[in-house]
Image 1 (cartoon, rainbow, N blue to C red):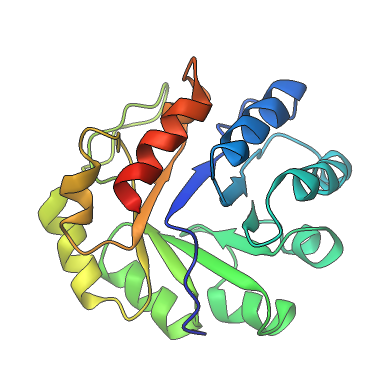
Image 2 (image 1 turned 120 degrees about the vertical axis):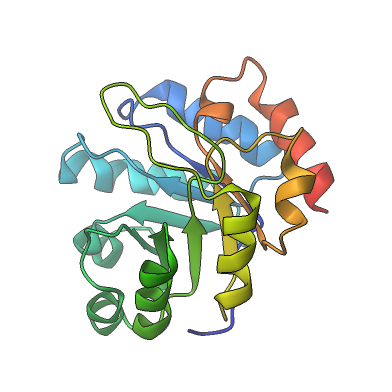
Amino acid sequence: MTGRLPPRLFWISPGRGLSDELLDTLRSCCNAGLTGFQLREKASVARALLATGGELRRIVPSEGLLMINDRLDLALAGAFDGVHLGAGSVPVDHARRLLGEAAWIGRSVHNDTELAEAVAGGADFVFASPVFPVCKAGVPATAPLGLAGLEGLVAASPMPVLGLGGITPENLDEVLGTGAHGVAVMRSIADSSDPHLLVQRYLERLS
């Protein structure tokens, strides 16, 4: 762990493919003040992800953080600042040895065991999820952490914890009340008719 602080708000791409719509939405979000973005498009091929990384780098502010999900090869080869790893990904310590100390490494955690693995591996921050119930088509629902579960992970973590899962501007104050550093969101922004305004609403409460 480096002690660096990530942005307090991340938008994670919704997995609907690389498109002009994705770039336009991100541009609108960054114009509203967003500085954290994770490219999470598991169905897209490496060449397309790498090319898109260059476009994303021109959109995300220079002081911002541009992450890619899982792809260590693209974190090494492209314009990304680091990689975000899941429970089934390469262990954090392996990623750190490959990417070096300057790279940012995030980790998704759902319980104390996964948090301990992230801490031992040297992650910079974690996304703790799901805070609230989230329904995904064709995927069994994961039991939510709830605010108490998130608070327990925050208390046990020496690194910044961002809540993820069902978080809206309306419940954001409750999430921050757990001591979480910030939040990550996916579909709330992707499905919004006005992502610029929505990001402003999140950032107002995070400031």
